[in-house]
Amino acid sequence: MTLIDRTFREKIVLVGVAVPPVSMDEVEDNLDELALLVDTAGADAMARVVQRMDAPDPALFVGKGKADELHDVCLAVDADTVVFDEELSPAQQRNLEKKLGRTAIDRTAVILDIFAQHAHTQQGKVQVELALLRYRLPRLRGRQASLSQQRGGVGAGGAIGNRGPGETQLEVDRRRLLRRITKLEHELQDLRRTRATQRRARRRSRLPNVTLVGYTNAGKSTLLNRLTTAGVLVEDRLFSTVDPTTRRMDMPGGEVILLSDTVGFVRKLPHQLVEAFRSTLDEVAEADLLLHIVDGSSTDPFGQIEAVRGVLQEIGAGHVPELVVFNKADRNPDINVFADREPGAVTMSALTGEGIDKLLDALSDRLRSLNEVAELRIPYDRGDVLAALHRSGEVLAETHEDDATVIRARLDEAELAKFAAWQVKDPSSHEPPGSAQR
Image (cartoon, rainbow, N blue to C red; front, side, top):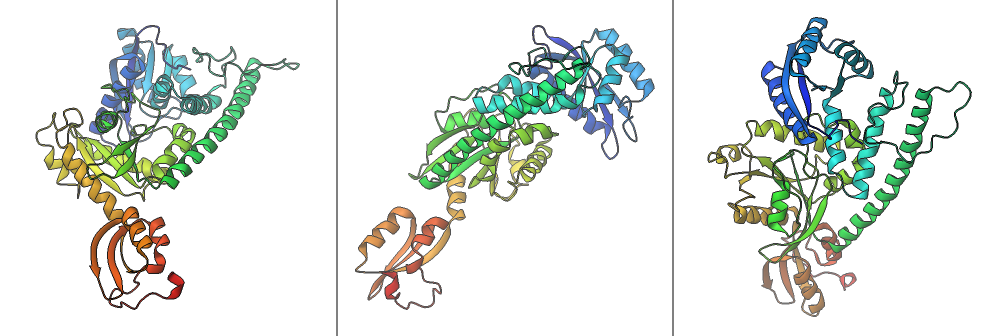
């Protein structure tokens, strides 16, 4: 399933283009991140080439003169592959490979390759392979001699069948990929149904669902391991974890929540991945609260926040409340300056444990604030209702009147509906509830 050959460390040349309004500094920052992605994929960035243009060249993406320069750079560093920071069209990829005499791929291909390395669950593997095949399908044109980029055997297991009269290898490859894509889509539908059933079961448990989101390598898995016994792989690399993990967590106040870790986000997250991981990302959209973990040691934390929120909007999770957490306080003594710019944000270090108590307090406060405060009048002969109310919600105040106990409690939507008959709609009016409440 690989796009980068990991039997040895490939030598890579990175290419970025500054098209207004993108500045050269932004391009350099993007190439810094691309270099980290390439390293995670198992290759070494040996050089970089940058060009400022009004618009990408439709044939080569870069200008002809810059393509000649790129060819010389590749020869100088003995590069195996050229990686562009923007997505290449199939025609641009073919033209570049012909001109440069070596493989040309883009940022999307690198990210897909990393996901292929780190997906371990059945659903993760199906999602990644589906994204890879959807990416490769339009790039089959002109590759008559089988699938030259399928070094890991993508699509293996799909029978080629007999060739019809005059059928080219390209047609065979395309038919094989389409057949494999259809099979994976059916598998993913079955897995989505299973995951939806699991989500319904969690909702019936009425445990608050808190999901960790953030830019890749922000420290989500480290935090999950510290707060629970998840045992999730932690590496100082981008996308070291891909498969989602959910664990029960006991809060200091005795509440129990479900804490989930998700795949990290990144600028220019490939559309193929967003679509293929839709069922996994649905977990984010259905969360009660998002813990938005931010790398407080980053040179551009607010750019990362913007990138994450952009993906959240794309997957339909922009409405979910979030608590921003600036992590890695052990690496940045001035991290509080960042928190001052995000209302309600907290700072901490998942590695050392610094600030964890403040994070848990803030988390408890935010979860409580999500539930509505209601006033209820419980007649004295309904002790069963009063006991159930104490079990179901957070009782804030309790007073006793002549014929009833008046309770102010914080309840979630489902519990509030159960006690609706005893709710005081107008707190200024304490008329006893009707017999229907009984």
